[in-house]
Image (cartoon, rainbow, N blue to C red; front, side, top):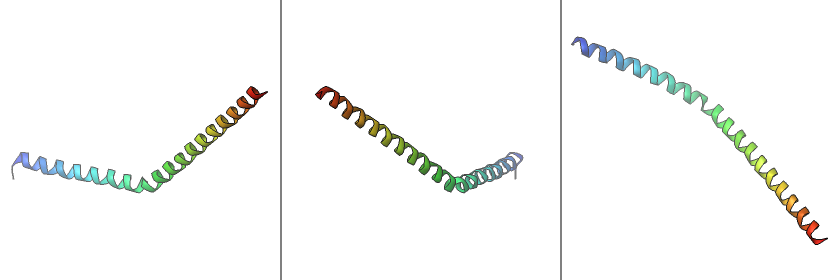
Length: 68
């Protein structure tokens, strides 16, 4: 084994260890991430629904004023 080949082997082992650690951290956070995305989607949906309701009520009031 040459001196340069030894460093490549050590580097490869370090990269594999780092990627494995990062990968396991990401996979352990997936349930938390999924829950966060679901809650964020729910909040956005509620806000859009409320904005639509306010817009409809505003339009109804505007049409009533025009009829008088």
